[in-house]
Length: 257
Image 1 (cartoon, rainbow, N blue to C red):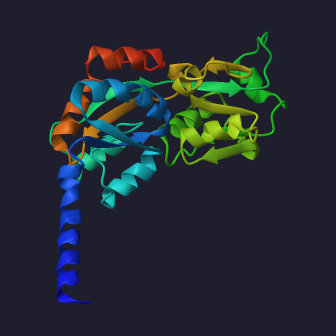
Image 2: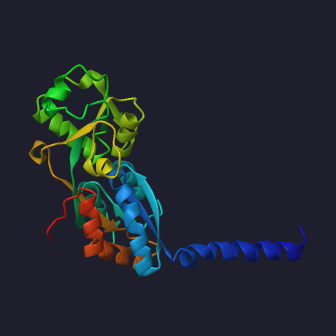
Image 3: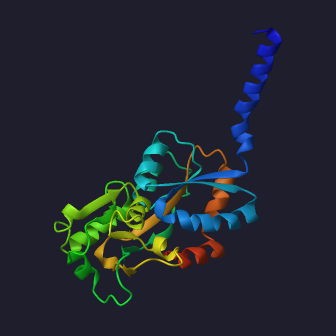
């Protein structure tokens, strides 16, 4: 390789290495819990219009995102489905100080695609029946909605009864896909997932909140955020009226603070 060509390659490599800091100044990279992904896609254009920043959205289970962030994944903001993981990241010194807050409270629902429009049975009666082969939930070890599903089933006295029929997804999004694809005939999923569909097959029922611990979903800016200014601006946007109205429309409860 000639000396001139080598110098040219070095210049190009140096330029590429400098791109992330400046080139991502108009991006905010968000690790988001699967249940909130549809809502975030709806929120994104409004934030871009106000800030000029584009959201780069990475949906997945809260437990998996937590592990990725601990391993150095390059996210700016973490929108979790619980409060435990953001609090742990804060304790571990991986968050921007003072940024953690509860942006929404989630709701759990039972979806049965084959249920008729005149279905009158209760959630307990449906789950006790033999009319489904598989019940989909998110993995209770990875996903807060899975933990809530397990708590609800235990409090209904059904956890042991449904063990042989349970199928678990890594996230509540995957649990939803099991039901939507027909691989499961019923599923305990996030209410916002149901409300996001215009013509949902079958019937669904809200799960009474006292049956499980509140699903308090927290947001936090990460310490190593490339676009710290954009990340902080996005969290302020989440607290505003425009974002709150959209979240309510998707079925979330909004904390008073």
